[in-house]
Image (cartoon, rainbow, N blue to C red; front, side, top):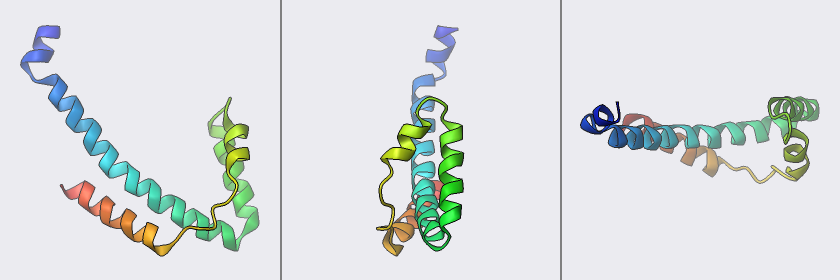
Length: 93
């Protein structure tokens, strides 16, 4: 089985998959956080709901993660633009 992995260039395929995943998902997360920042600035109860949902998804570290988020008010259109451009570039390249 290890010989077959080497014959099929498994290492190259795995590294390409990891690179493509990172280039596609990181800009998407940037856009998501920017949109969430604008949305939670308008509706504070939605901010509480989002924080509780994140804390529920990470059982042991959820409350620590929520406690370390101090400000997200510095999101800008530039972050959303760069995220969208990176997302388009990552999904097509």
